[in-house]
Image 1 (cartoon, rainbow, N blue to C red):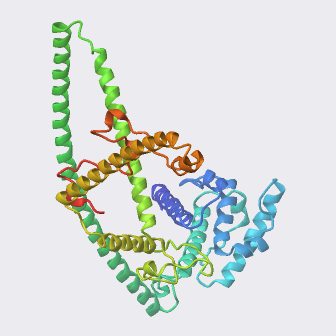
Image 2: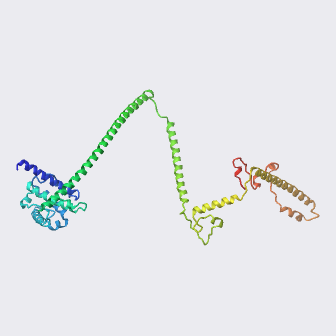
Image 3: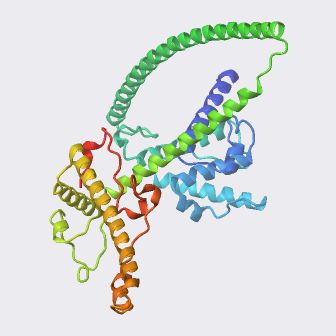
Length: 413
């Protein structure tokens, strides 16, 4: 084998090792120490630190409990622990080869672990990574184990051929599905490119329009500066803006109050608002109770509806009055009031005469016997200016209101 071919093969092995470990890191997160040494060409030369972290990472994935039992010299704190670590790793790998038939881990000299690097060492590490990756796939319940090709070929040629055929069939299906997805992806990408081209074209048009508008705006500004050099906003303009803002604030306040009223109305209209009352001390009137949907439960909404219906029924018992009847009643009341005032004046005059007569009849009858019945009478003083025409408001029981054409049909006794 020429040196060039061997070099290419070695680089290929390094790439495969890197790929296997990278696939495992997607499921099993590596430590920060492993991340610092994990590279494609990490074993081109002697690299003890990378060997320690990579081999421990791979065997921890295989069996995290046994690695703690079999390899006690971890982590490595000093140089003396390196020898113990190598010996424990070699011993554990030999046990793995005996325990797992498909391990296919080649034998390696302890000296290769002292100077971990080069062609033979990378072949050894590649086989370990393949074995760990194979065991990881076997643990996945979604993967049919019969489709997983063993690392070590079977002694039976028919079994090997069947495995290869199954693997080829699965690979063909995967390739076909992959190609179909790639074709769909290419179509989507092509459509996206077309849409992107349209968007870019529109954006360019918008940019041109914005540029023109900016030029027009600058031109207008220059014209304003030239034609109206002393142009300023009047002070009253700001006052008007403040007035508009105040009106807007009032409108918003009214709007908020309206919303609160709506919430309150919704709450009061809720059938779950039940009032508490003592049934033994308080009895709902019969007129009200017959309007309640649930007489045993005092619901606020039903109670208000019952009172409203009851008031409407009471209102219907009174006959409405028209304008003519109200005028006639007003005339009668005015006539009776005038008669009352006239009678009061007559009684006052009669009282004065009787008092005068009582002074002349003092010798005939005792004065106290004549005056006593009249002293018990008390007459109200009537304003002389309004005796003939009007009456003081204090002496009236009620003052009729003027009837308009708008409310004459809605007046009830």
